[in-house]
Length: 292
Image (cartoon, rainbow, N blue to C red):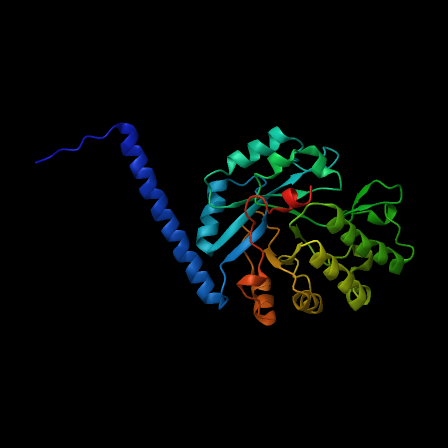
């Protein structure tokens, strides 16, 4: 009889590998089941997930349960952006990336305002899988940043001519995609409260096409927002016809992330295939490397 002696380190390493393999197999089984249930030919990803105060292990359990791979995003930019956490330099960004190392998630940021990229080196940003932003922070009457979703926004932004505001808002979407090295534009077609009641009046075909053309030109994926249930079908059809890539996003906090019913329904309606869905790009091809 032959006895094989292993060191404590070898024993632990062996068990960690086995455990990781089992976890990967279980996650793959859940993802396969979710994919079969949707009838889509691609696995589900939610690339707009905020950890906030939730624990990553709990979030990973939810990811496994729902068969959806998550893309975690943290707010990033200068400290003028007020959130519980705002990554503002290379050290903070690298620390954030390290907390997600060896986790079955994509690592992203939600970029804030127009000066966020100057906070970080190109090398640090390249550690991310993707960069996401939206148009919700808008230049106000005094040129300073205005959070369009907050109460009292009428006092900070000029809505006296709503059609004129809408033109500026559409141009703002285009400017963001033209000037910032982003992979995904999130919360697409959302409107602030003073315009929201007449949604279809303000999102005309011409305005939709202007945003869609910019997404194509600058290779920016448009998010199908499951939480907001936006964009609506006409916007999505225009984007589909133009060859835009799409991502799915819940903008969810625990335990709301991974609820993608609206995105799945729209994908079915549009006949989206694997090639229509954004997936994080390999090193050297990311927006922060191509465009900065």
